[in-house]
Length: 58
Image (cartoon, rainbow, N blue to C red):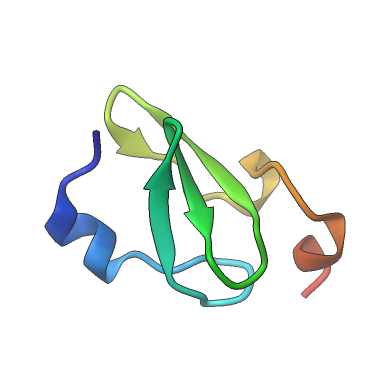
């Protein structure tokens, strides 16, 4: 689980949208990309994201 304070300052690197934690991933509320969490550390790299391919082209 990622710290609430950290979630408040994180933004999606692809579209700069707000994010939330869901099912062990960081999910962008704007473009839908899902970033993995490894050892309680969000991996906020576009290349590591799952989800909508259109968002990765931004």
